[in-house]
Image (cartoon, rainbow, N blue to C red):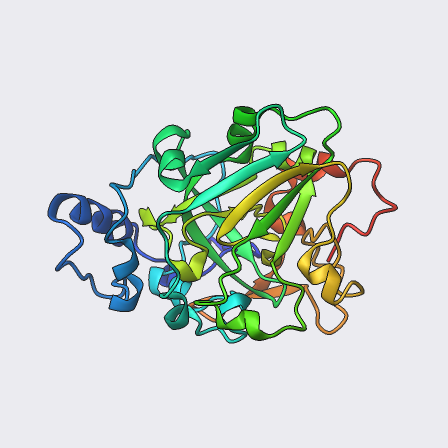
Amino acid sequence: MLIRIRRGWEIPDREVTPEALVFNRRALLQAGGAAGIALSGLALPSHGQAQTAATPEFPTPARNPRYQPERGLTAEREATTYNNFYEFGTDKGIYRAAQKLPLRPWTVKVDGLVDTPREFSVDELIRSMPMEERAYRLRCVEAWSMVVPWTGFPLSALLAQVGVKSGAKYVRFETAAMPAVMPGLRQSWYPWPYIEGCTVAEAGNDLSFVVLGAYGKPLLPQNGAPIRFHQPWKYGFKAGKSLVRISLVAERPKTFWEAIQAQEYGFWGNINPEVPHPRWSQASERILGTGERVPTKLFNGYGEFVSDLYTGLQSERLWA
């Protein structure tokens, strides 16, 4: 008699989104256009589709097979209606308010300790960068998680365009601050704009991904449109949404959550199930859409790709 014991990251087969639904939907969208197509269980609400109408044709590159999420994709509706984006509010239902975010024109300035400072339009990046799809796990510090098929390119490809000077030690990310459409900016006790950062070595790791799309189409506002950043081995608060500036700097930047609660949120933000948040455990996580709790993995399961980045840094507070 064969007895199978599931590993910690596995979920029951019945709860995995069928592959045919995910990929056939993309084929239908390409063949027949987005208008009028609504597949049961995957169709977005109309308020999540209107913002993409004016954007140019979006590429649908092949998925990179190197980074396996070891879990089924989160249903698109779940990933686009349960979001943290404090510029629009502190509840998870900010997707409605976020639809006011203007997505074009949009540029990202890359400056600081670089050979050639430049300003890139999002459409230029879509056309010129080595676009690919990667299904990454995302683990929120609040102990919930999801798996999203992101479309984008390695951050290293962007940095190669400007050239990094030898004095650069850190990368500072600055996100949009638009009071006219972002009601959360009225909360003056927050240190706006949202600032995040990582080391140059972390930025150069191939897992560091600049995201321009999800589920085969441009990012929606609530997910950080039109351009965001994601390092899947770190807690989600380390990802900058709606980026407007990327700066190479010599000094470690003071990040948004460090400025608010340094005793709870450090600079590094790496995922470690054995290091609890001061107010809750990080040993397990709730899978968005299924509600199942599963054990959390060190570095969110990406340790083989990133653990060497932290050799000799044991004295640092590496875990959020």
